[in-house]
Length: 536
Image (cartoon, rainbow, N blue to C red; front, top):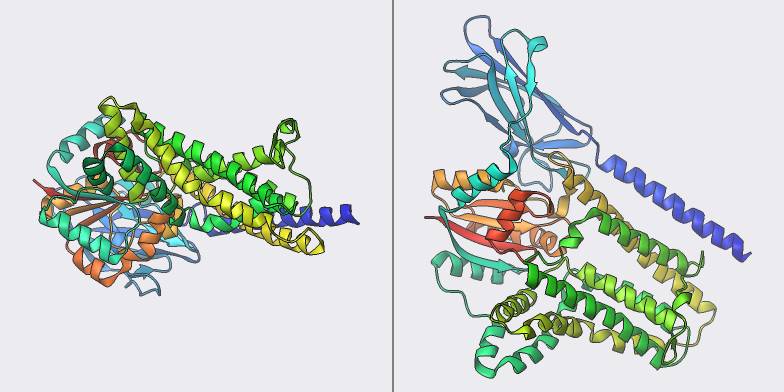
């Protein structure tokens, strides 16, 4: 009977996985949009340009993301085409089905005529990266039309060209982490006015009370990291993992030790990530931008979930030689590994306190004080503090019985939810890294009216002499998604930034040399990071 139940659970899990794969395939079509172009004459000598947009079912294109670029001296006037419509939940008007537009061209029309069409849209809750298609057209007709790939500078030249452009901008202010409306507006006003930023808490404590007090303050600040958007949703999952082992006995020392090992893994890995960030200048939590990391996390959670349903037993038996109090070494080692994994997942969120610690650690290390390298570990200790206490509480649960099977199944469902989320996140990151036109997470994509190309945004800011606002975000960054859902949608925030040039810089592609140069120039330690700049 037990084997039959396990088989049912296993088959259910496989069916769920297949169903999810089908959903992924449906929600992110390979090619949701297409555009063709033709150069015509209207029966006389008037040159006409016709664009034909193809939109898949349940997809739509944004009106304000569409742009036509022509050679200098040539102008286009729209003379025919449908009106976009208002769609619930979207700030920009949209086109819901395939359509064509016709433009009259004024000026000398060269042959071939080189032009580019820019557009962006969404499909079934998944938004796509902006896409630009270039054409070389002749009057010979559609059959003679030649579609050309956009020309692009070599990587090194792109970086050098952007660096020269960036020299013309002065940074007014930088901030990181999730900020509510009042905090965000306060920072914007302070940066816009050119006032000196307020000295960080740890710097003030260091100057007044010395390094020891500043270091001890880091521990309670680390405790607060458990309230960040990356850690808070994981608390039920963490309790499920610890509780499954702690509830097997009736001694609170068992749960305390499991929670302690879990916290130790979290401390070591979180501290190690901080040290790497200090020594190399790498972006904190950069590993979370890898789709393969997220796929690996999804597999680990899937295995843990199946073990909750007794499909098989997760057993670290080869580490059973040692004992930690009343906890076998195998269980303790498993809790340690899971704590290390939780620290890696927490790295996707960057709170101001983390930036304070990393900046202080980097400053101390640069001055020859090696104590700076231990500060990230103190932050990890503070983050790990609740878990031994929570583990002890789980260890005081009533003795195992039939009821415990139901509790394990509830835990299993929670962990399956986490596995599905990280699997979906891996798919989104994989498509994002594939290049323009690939799907990205809707909740973290650029708000309506924002640009996504920094060099292009700088050009607009130069031409219109406007302030330039940068939002560095990532698909795996929950704080970034929270900012888009809340603060960036606040009417006061929209009104305050209304006349600025706003650009959402996606920081997931760690192989792009231009992106790396941008992150290095603006000292982006983690996501989200905001930069306000003015043309000099």
